[in-house]
Image (cartoon, rainbow, N blue to C red; front, side, top):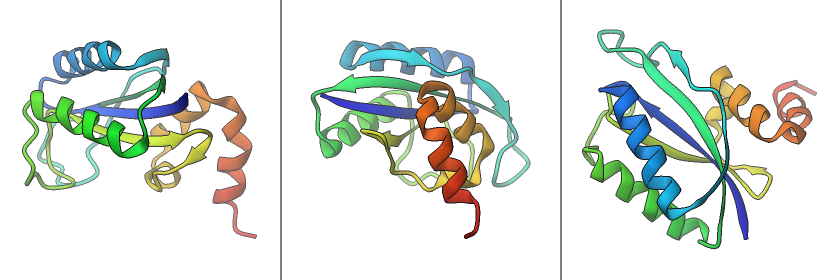
Length: 136
């Protein structure tokens, strides 16, 4: 079994889309925990709504590639377009942040809300995150 932290974000009908995404993921994966969901300012163009962001801790027998396919399917089911601007508004954004205790998304180092969600779900990663951020 693989232990994974999945980041969830939306700024278009965010409450509804996040709720539906959590339900859909719960039907496909064994959800062990959920971080607090917080409002964050958009990173890209400011002429868009704030995001609702949080994370799920899950266990799955799926491999990394298979899980990415599942996440992409949920995004598409919720109306995400393939050609969306990386920093533009979106109905759903799902990312694998941690895979079996290993940080696999570098955005964790740049975004405080992601670090907080990961530490909330996996406190043992706090030291790793701090060490990786501090210049030697």
